Image (cartoon, rainbow, N blue to C red):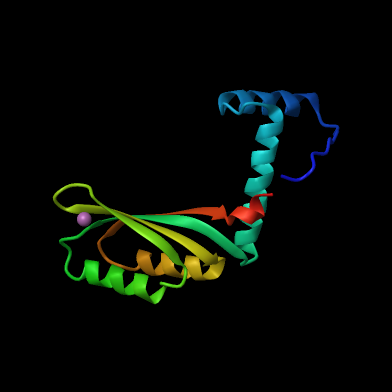
Length: 138
Ligand code: NI
């Protein structure tokens, strides 16, 4: 953990009140913790925008009875094997599967894979959660 620094800033009272209400509503333990979380979120978003090394997860829901879908999804995952850290498969019901694909790699490659998932007929949900690699979370 790096050395702590103290900062002070000036801002409108109305903005401070609105932010404190946000901190309370979101159950952050303190204003400082909320600001730190938002700063990390900004840095993570910037890393994605600048095509840096990032991490995340892709959650897919699909009907495995759909012709060819399982093979197609497997082919894509083999094509992007270099950025896939792990996958978890859950059989939701008789028809539906939920798959979580954990990824770490260049942002552009991850987005490319997600776009291909979108193009596959029968994929009903396809959600990307964008995070940072651990050491970027300073
Ligand atoms: Ni399944």
